[in-house]
Structures are given as structure tokens and as C-alpha cells.
Length: 432
Image 1 (tube, rainbow, N blue to C red):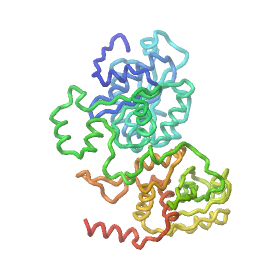
Image 2 (tube, rainbow, N blue to C red):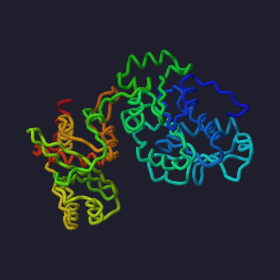
Image 3 (tube, rainbow, N blue to C red):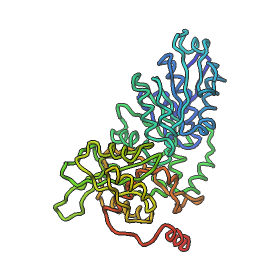
Image 4 (cartoon, helix red, strand yellow):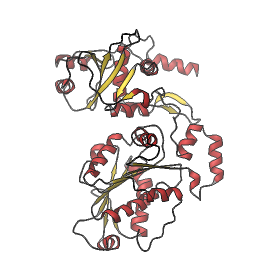
């Protein structure tokens, strides 16, 4: 760790620094000392792996500049004096010759630098090979699963290790892809190590503040933000969704099953979900198997049609778009894929249709539909200052696959609504 540096980590931090797992998930309460662990772990990893490129990734650049970057610069630049931070044309920390000597005991023809990225845009993370990565606050909604997968691709050649330091925030992809497999393995997963500690693990955290939060906050919020435990947050729309029950391994439906397609139109993002309808002989409702998802932009209707139907056994029954998106449907029809309009005008009624189908155990989702699974775990209503959910959906414009699912299940489960969105909101205001 450097001859002139003495660390005094608390037990939770020490567990992270001592772990040999390829992926370390450090879940901690607020001010528990998770972010300050990142630079120490990365420095340790750089000394172990040698010269090359390393990564620091946060959900957004503003968050990087508020938290991770100041901690990184304090450790690497001010305390250890290993090099300098460069903000333009790209954010990176470059080791100096003296920094290389102090870290590796030699100078190298291969430069050593730490590259800073953000997870808002997964494409921004596709570049050269990296040797290790520190991901800070990856549990936030804006840190997409696609960004995590892009980081793993950058680390794959070197089989680089990953440290994730975060508050749990909610049951998103982080829980599904890392925490749940670790828990199912009884805490002995061969590749994943989970370390949890609450805010009080930090010796300087005031016990009075911890007691106040326990007394005044809703239990779910206290568990998330002060104990570092996953908890189902208030306002989660599809709280009936259970990954262990509703998600199945990737599959290809039998060719004779009926096929249906839900579409959400958009110039930037057109989303689609493919469903196969399982015949039931016991009189129970037909089970809907969601086996494929699609998300693409900057394509014509004809190009979308070609990509959508590639590999499909036949033309599916398609539904999608709001009443005002007739032009999209006309263009898809002209391209050879007729799309009927959704029978619903109300988003809320459509949400109820999806919720009911999931709650009645009529839906199975392929594990390959990672985008849909991620959206299901994050789709939540805005919570007010008292911790109570409102009718508004947080970041509603980002859930393209769920919009496609709403069109699809609203049609498959039949019926029309009689209340439009404006009436529903007025009614909600009146009742409230």
C-alpha cells in the first residue's frame, strides 16, 4: 500500500480490502465509509496488477465530482503524490515517473492511468482493456445494468476485479445479478463477495443521528440508507413481481405456440417485447411467456421490421402505441408489420392490467430479457417528503420496455377502460 501510508480501516472496510473475490459488493449505510474505501482498494489493485488502464465509474459526472473524484484525488494526488489529474479532453489520472517507482519499484514503457467514466451512457464505457474497476454508487437508478456489462467487457481480457461501493437504494439489477446469487450460495459464491455494514460501523458516526433516523424514517428507508440492507421501497409499482418465481432460464418457445408483440414507438428508442402463449388444458388462464426483448433507435419502420422478425417463426399479432401514434402504425403496416392500437387510453388502467397478470401468476419472463427485468425492479412512484408514494412515476420517460409490456398485456387480457388519464388524476386529487 506504499511505505509512507498507514491505513486504519474499520472491520467492514478491512473485509473489502482483504477480499480475494473477483467482484466485491460493499453495501453500507450513509457515511459508513464506503466511498473512502474505493481509492485504497484501487491503489492496492494497481500495485498488484501493474502498469495499465484502470477505471472509476459513477452513475453521472456530477456525482463523480461531488464524491468519488475528491476522495480519489485526496488519496492518489495529495496524500501519495503519485501523479496528476487531467480534466480535458477526457477525465483521467496519470501516474508520474516518480509515482510509478513508488508503486511498482520501476518505470514502465506502458503508461498507468485511471480513467473516469459515467454510467448514464453505456456506450461511453466501451474502449480499451482495463485491469480493475471501482464503481461508486452503482445501486442508483441511473447506473444501468448495460453499463455494468460494458465494464465487465473492458475487464474480460485481463479478468480484472471490480469493487462496487454503494447504498442499496432498491432491488434493481445489482440485487438480482450479484446479491441474490451470493445469498443463494450461502455467502460462499466462487466469484462474488458481499460485505455489509451500517452507518454506525464508522466510529465517527453519531449514535444520536442513527437513533433519530430509526425513530423518524419509514422502516424500508432506514434499512436502505442506514443499515445497508436491501428493502422493498415504498412506491415500487410492481411489488408483486418475484424474480425467483417469475423469471425462468432463457428459452425458445415451441413453434406452434401463438405469438404476440408489444411495441413502444420512438425515434430515439423503439422498444418491443415478444410473447408466446402457452396453451392450457386445465381451464386455467393461458400463461404468457415473455421470451425476447428489443430496443433500438434511428431506424426506419422497415429496418425495425426486419430486425424484429429475424428468427421468428411467423408474423406475430402486434399491438402498440397511444391513440395519437397512428402515423407510426401506418409506417409499420406499410413495411409489412400491421400493428393495432392499444385498447386503453389510461396508463393507470394499463398498469393495473400488468400488475394483475403478474399477481395471478400468468407471466413468465426469460432471464435473457435483462432490460425488462431491470425496469420491473426500478419502476416506482415518486415518494413525497413523508415517504408516501404519489401517483407520479419517477423517470417515466425511461421505461420503454414496460410501456411495450403495458400495451401487450392490456390487449392480451382484453377490455377497454372508461377513464382517461386526466380524469384519473382529477379523481385522485379529489379523493386526496
